[in-house]
Amino acid sequence: MVFGGFSATSRKDRIADGGAKLLITADGGWRGGRTIELKAAADQPLASRCRTIERVIVDRRTAEPVPMDAKRDVWWHEVVEGQSPICAPEPVAAEHPLFLLYKSGSRAQ
Image 1 (cartoon, rainbow, N blue to C red):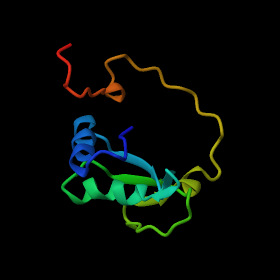
Image 2: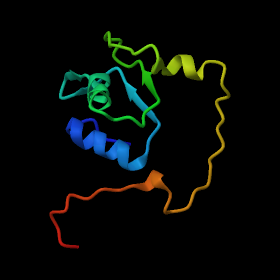
Image 3: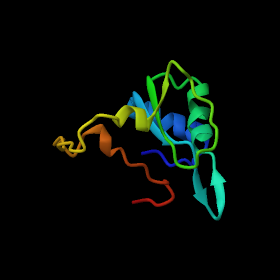
């Protein structure tokens, strides 16, 4: 998970560090009574040489129009249509890249 409030550079660095091939986002969300354009925020690092992402899955939350790259982007509801609602968990080691955790570096701990 990469927080959408990070700068495009921070999002790009985190995606690259994890070698992510898939990015899941939403068309938008709400914060403080305002609509936040999450898909637009997800597109920013992809436009700046973030080459590992092969597919972007977009959940429709706000129903606001968003640009979709026909070769890369798909809607969540289309992906899950006809899929089983049950997904068995996959055990992974604690060192698995899923668990990349960043710290601010403001503490010498």
